[in-house]
Amino acid sequence: MTKFGRPDFHPAIAAALRGYSLSRFKQDLTAGVVVGVIAIPLAIAFAIASGVSPATGLVTAIIGGFLVSAFGGNSVQIGGPTGAFIVIIYNIIALYGIAGLALATFMAGCILVLLGLFRLGTVIKFIPYPIVVGFTAGIAVTIFSTQMPDFFGLRIDEAVPGDFLGKWGVYIRNFGSIDPATAVVGLVSLAIIVLTPRISKRIPGALTAIVLVTLMVWAAREFMGIEGIQTIGDRFGAFDTSLPRPVAIGFDMASVNLLLPSAFTIAMLGAIESLLSATVADGVTGGRTNSNTELIGQGIANMAVPLFGGIPVTGAIARTMANITNGGRTPVAGIIHALVLVVTFLFAMPLISLVPMSCLAAVLIMVSYNMSGWRTIRGMVNNPKGDVWVLAVTFLLTVIFDLTIAIEIGMLLAVVVFLRRVSENTTIKVYGDQLDAADSDMTKHEVLDLEPGVSVYEIDGPFFFGAATKFDELMRASTSDVPFVRIIRMRRVPFIDSTGIHNLQILIEASQQEGITVVLSGVRDNVREALHRSHIDALIPSGHICDHISKAVVVANELAVNRRRELRGVMAVMD
Image (tube, rainbow, N blue to C red):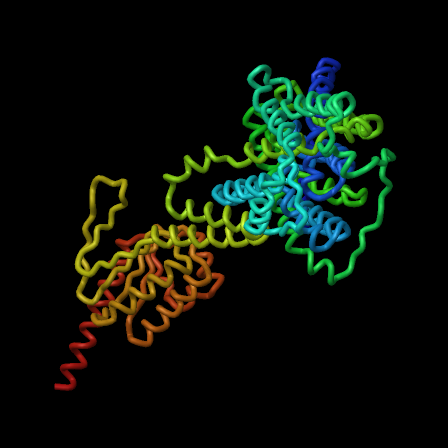
């Protein structure tokens, strides 16, 4: 760690507790209780949609929520299971089982801790926005598609494929098996979720729908004899309300190698979502998140939850904003939210078993709608075509294939688009007779005359591998008129990479073999340092590396004049 200095680990709770007051505690208490109540249906819904039990969702929210607040770098962040993880958790369980998910989650936690220790928190924020929008929208569509059987009460006797197109094929073939009562419960739940914020923004629509619809279904069963509306208890049976004990995670290199891509996807998704949530929170509260500490806190949480059978954890934007809206300003509110969930887990699980599955499906359909970001996508249609393509490809890959492939190919495509734009912005100009030596911000221009046999090549922009190839092609195209001296003007080259250095070396060596002298002009300090480390400056006399074009032209003109004299002398001798 000496190269990176001491770990940047400063949990927000340490600063928050200094000067902590009773009035602040009352605000945090109110916010923590409200957020805890909001988190109950979400934790249960996300767990069921991910392929695990409702109790697992609550355990994850308890342990993860507590550790994110205790060790994270944001004062108001609320951690727990989120919709973004549903797709990848479901796929990991389908392929590798619960044990595979535990190992992948633990490894993801280790990756997050390492990202924070190596101070890469700020780098994560540079992931292109079209990728974030694309895979978030793709996850939303996938979540929506998985809720159709529960929402409509479809009776499906065949195996439902994991892929998006196959899944919808099964739905369409079995659409005639809709249970009317279940569909009504789902539609009523969805209507309550949508309409509740119009009455009061402080009342969580999801919780209101669960309470009212659960009472309605219970009354219909008890007093009207209506059956067929499946509840959580019908599907999962009785819940074990004892607190889970830690279990060992099996490690072997074969499993680690197999699950590493999934672990990396969990880590990247968790890092992106938690830092995005923290950024949004900072914009509202005026706070400042320590990104590296936040990643370490998220990593600790994800290393701990699989030991108790939990699923991946990250910062939850909706719950974080609810925390802020209700007055939460320190991590104490997040810890209280976790305690509310503990009480729910210990004493309210029998009531949770009465919640209809179609009501939870309605909650997740609303979550997927909010995740879709369709307004953002509509606004990005007029963005540069490269960004639109990155968004579209990431979205389609997320929906049709899986999130791991979508992030990998989306990142690759975004890098290609970025490099293309940078290389297009790097221009190379050729001068042969006269040269304007003035900078663009000068009103008085100095025109320099070039002696015959002197050519100037001005590079404007980064001299990396894309531009280096363009420069090499220009050199090859201009070999018909071989000069005596080549001035390479580099005043507007902010950096040079290894390919640029390699091409420059080849140019200098090839020019010297042809008897052409190379003069460098306007080399910046960082570029000159790169040339020095690569020993390129040893190929050129020190007097041929000039800090200004006027000096370079004087040197080049003198070399050209001397070269013509030499040639005339040789011709005279031959005559």
